[in-house]
Image (cartoon, rainbow, N blue to C red; front, side, top):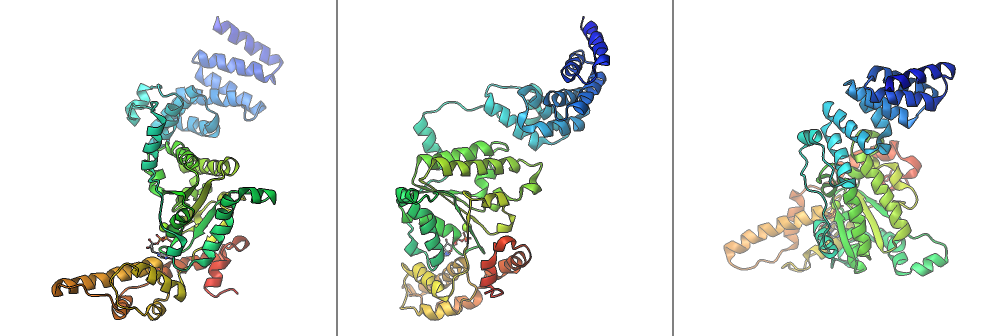
Length: 439
Ligand SMILES: Nc1ncnc2c1ncn2[C@@H]1O[C@H](COP(=O)(O)OP(=O)(O)O)[C@@H](O)[C@H]1O
Ligand SMILES: [Mg+2]
């Protein structure tokens, strides 16, 4: 019977070779009849006449799969990636397994499981050994409690005044995200858009994470610190769901500062990541960012990176991280403030912080902290042998400053090159100014 139909369809096509639906119908019948090479031929003919035809592509890939031409099938499926019906997805995953792309396979399988929790495929399970459990409904509060623990939601007591120096950064954060949060109506009246985030960049240890936390403390908001590991450590392919979870958690807990540390890992240029799972994470991240802008005004988004040049340009579009701030190493006055702040509750003589600060060119805040720790260790040893508390002195700090090396110089060695040779639209002018290469 089927063969009859195939035969007459064949004949009909002789008369109208450009009839795409007819040819598709024939090809699909052939596929059903397991005539794989013939079906593949017809699907290819169809694609020649109707470029990008999804049904033909799906059929062709399926032929390849049955002919064990797995890498060919993968190429076709890859193009359809976001539009694959479930049965095609299953074939795609099996092809990936045959091609040994297990991570990608696992990621896609996870996607199916999210959509249809009860789904099972013995053949795939055998290779990927996914935990068989899937999401069950929990009490909402319990779930939120779990999420806030999972992402370490906290309410910091740190305030701007605890952060030494960084006046410009504090001003920018106030103007760009704190003031709008406090006076949304005012901003709206002047037609100013609320939303978008701030991307902090600069050498390590200069207070990016610190100021993000203090931003939350400053406005009595909750703080969620999302590190790279939070996103990557999770089961491959689950990251998109996790990202959504994180943004939802922040929205529910507004006012909330949502801080993405080492965002370069999420935002690495998409072109470098063509095949990888991260490409989807980035797109999801951007979608969530845009979502925050439209439906949530109580969520402040901050991100930090030591490697801004690795962050995908799409992150910098208006409404996303459209404010990029250089967090520079503290100058002498700022170093003095940092010293004072870090020594506040320690046993000290009256310390000549000005003198110490002047000796600490190129030291980051973290370097200063390390230096104080060093001095304290020395003092502790002394105190233990003498049996009494020995206050820290100016001399102790100067001595520790001589043994400790600043860590920011290495960063500037590479930053300088990016600022000089990859400084699109003056993005890194602040680095050049800091290095006194530019006025
Ligand atoms: N401006 C500052 N004022 C006070 N402490 C600072 C400052 N900058 C850095 N520190 C100290 O150094 C530590 C490391 O800074 P951090 O914010 O983690 O640096 P980054 O995120 O830029 O790598 C902080 O926890 C804090 O103790
Ligand atoms: Mg940090």
